Length: 391
Image (cartoon, rainbow, N blue to C red):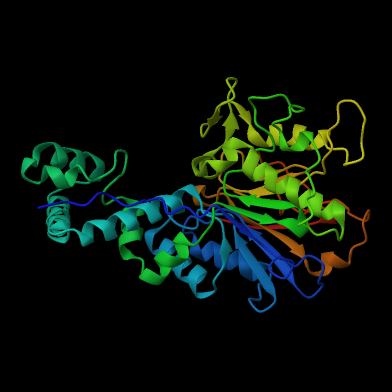
């Protein structure tokens, strides 16, 4: 019997661009709601949406990723159904990615002669083992893979590091084909050109740490070339769009989906890490944005660029992390802390530039319990409003 090779389990979609209609900032009758990591906490999500009076007909809801897993299994399935039924805009999170990979693997195994029979046989044995007191699925699977020589060719098809019958597997197995299609259509990055904003689960680097900020390889070190094919209407806006796209395409780390899904910091040797050590990437991003002084600037120590905003999640250990050009929204709901949402547009679209006022109302609380301003600056002149609910 010939066994075909495995497909691409990752099914990555790199980038989606949102128009002004898909991300309305200037319409007082429409809002953008960007919600932090959900992790299957369905009831808390509904409480949060009720708190901000979410209206699907006029509000654009966007997820920062990690909509499922880690929380209750039933909650993950409910969140997934909600996202699909409302066609919610979202980027992938690292946990969403694992679910996608497992479902793609399952469909591959099911397509192979004998694959379904083997999988059902193993599942029956695991369920029987549970009845006799087994409760560590990882240990049980390792033992089976080691001793079940008869089916070794099948056990070898489980990629290294994957956990059969774990949380991600169970979600992948149970979700419908429509839900699977929704998941695989989610990009790892969203670019909002008119808002000069990136949305990514873990984050974005504005420069390659391997080179100095002013190096010619860095996209912020030079003004983009405006070719004849590019629109001449609003050259500054076009240049900003091209430079923002260059951040995504010319900073090599941003081309690696694993980085966008997992990054927390950068080590001293300039490599990206998903661990808590190293310099938080948002700190490096802040330094890059401080150097931006506009396309006409010739001042020493500055760069010919305009700042752009990154909205992200993933870093629950840092909690709500609000800086001038980066907004981290994972406030740790799955760890019994809070779930947060950033609200943009609506009534705030009527605010005049320069009228932003801090508001310390307890909606924005950092990892140490400090109350932050719940009205962060957003973009060049705008502001947002943070709302949260306890979990």
